[in-house]
Image (cartoon, rainbow, N blue to C red; front, side, top):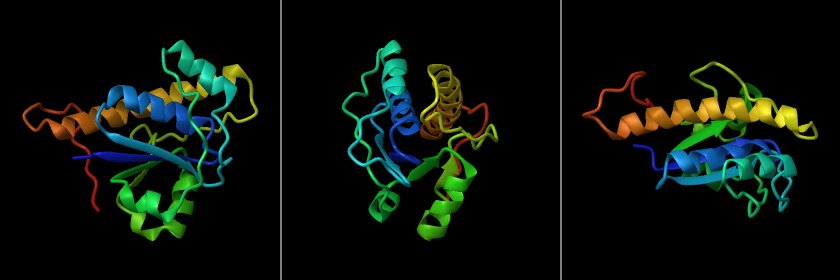
Length: 160
């Protein structure tokens, strides 16, 4: 059973805050956190990310970027990144993450591009991918918590 999820991107101001908000809505009670490999420490979420979440009735204005640290990786039961290079970077620098580190688009076999410094349309395209990844992971996590309810895509299998 997954009780804590760490979401990682580069700056921790665009993709992570949106993914965090979407997971919070779908998985109440799960401890969620985010960090960036090269974070804009202390910075708020990008204005386009704030606007897109506001349209969904979610307020992410309190979000502040934070740098990825070893303790983030150690304390999370599941770590989700946005693309394969991020996964490879974390595996290299934090080898204990192997087995609990995946891409948000793992099951759909896709990466989520960085919309930083792009227009609102690019943020919307990015959020569509984030939605897809969050939906896939949330369904698997919920299914893994309900052993009596058959899962349509199988339970989450994470080895630690």
